[in-house]
Image 1: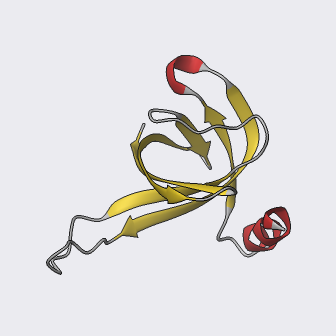
Image 2: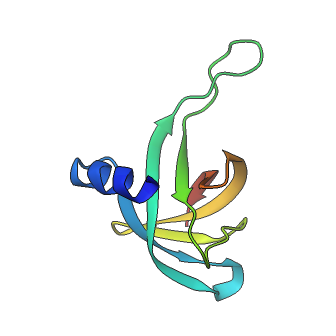
Length: 99
């Protein structure tokens, strides 16, 4: 089901395909389904706006285990996985920084 939804969202321009490279150069996984959310403005515990950040949702598949400092290449942009901020058995969500 996730693949069908992602295909439709990719056709609409709100989802992407990426290459994932694990920390320190391996393993490499192609055709990784991702959602890149730029300029996310989280709200702190006391209601203050925090600095904008980029988050990536990675659709999980066999052979793909995203790890901190893994590299995601999407549409010419390179991101490094920072802190895992959520997810479930089908999606892993990360705060990222430019690589």
